Image 1 (cartoon, helix red, strand yellow):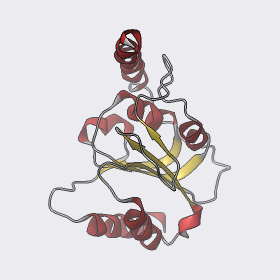
Image 2 (image 1 turned 90 degrees about the vertical axis):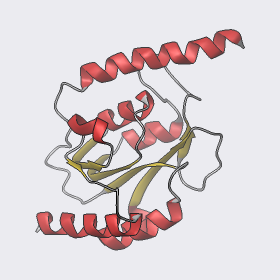
Image 3 (image 1 turned 60 degrees about the vertical axis):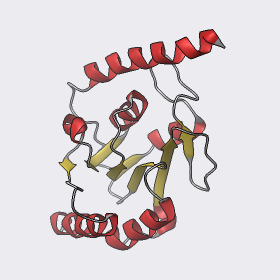
Image 4 (image 1 turned 45 degrees about the vertical axis):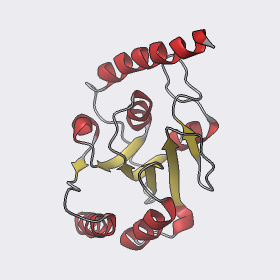
Length: 174
């Protein structure tokens, strides 16, 4: 038990070093042949209620809810109807979380990747860095090099943020 409690911070330390090195490279983009619009959402389940965000994102981006790929994460043990994992439960030395949910989510290319979290946990940073997306969006100011668009959420509700974001994406996609 003692060994396990020491092992996780060491793994996170090595992952943080890898993240800093990868931060210097360009953001991963999908091949130009992937023309279908797809939306991925990486969301903090301790902060956001997924069904509400799902409805808002689906309406704002005009994409059916069943076509949006989700990956949730939590600091606590969770049970969710959406793909999710618990932070630090399936850590590898240099790949971050290697749970089946995280691996499946990272294997897809996305037109838009929405990052609904404000933490800078090395596992989440690594997942964001490994995902290929044409346009990465979020509100974590610490991830400026890994996001194409950072929005300020200080005075807006999540509903307003998602609506404005959907309108913005629609305008730049025309």
